[in-house]
Image: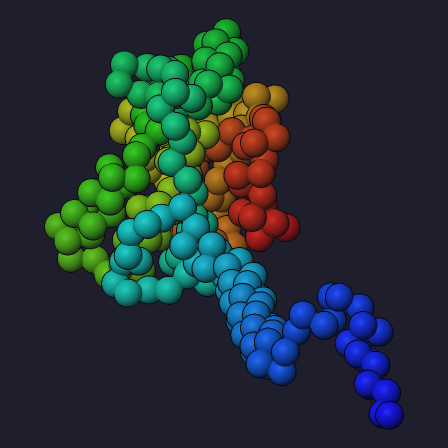
Length: 244
């Protein structure tokens, strides 16, 4: 009499016996789909990682279209000017009626005015913080009124989003005894400018656009920027690096 064949399935672990050819095929399809999706995610992340630094450098602080369709340089400059973010209103304080600066810069300007006054020199603050919106008007409206090209205008005024004044660290100064030299290259002939050359660094101010500056901006002996904090140094480090 023939003996019944043994049930070989009893020798296979339970976890393996529950499958079927159809189940194995579905599992492989799932693995292939997941692998493809993971590869797509990794490729997208790599593309973003490569492109993002260039996009940030190009956009800088300005969300406005570049004037005249000009494109920023590789270091972020537009028509010679570096991009700057607009300071938060909460960080500003008054230095004169209608004029504000970043708090540290404001304290330094007031101390500098007092020191100059003790030496018989009257330093007048002509301009401090300017919003990007105001800079837009100063650039495009004056450019139009004077029939200037964007390049011509940029030599004397930064495009919106590219002005040091938007940081709250930049200030335009004048000599109270020689107001005819306000915002003029002739300011460098005044007692106030001579005093600034001797003393401005004591208060952490530096001339932004000296003669022959590497940015190609017109000489502005009245325009000084504050560099007396780590944040201010970080803000103007690209300009400092270019001038070295």
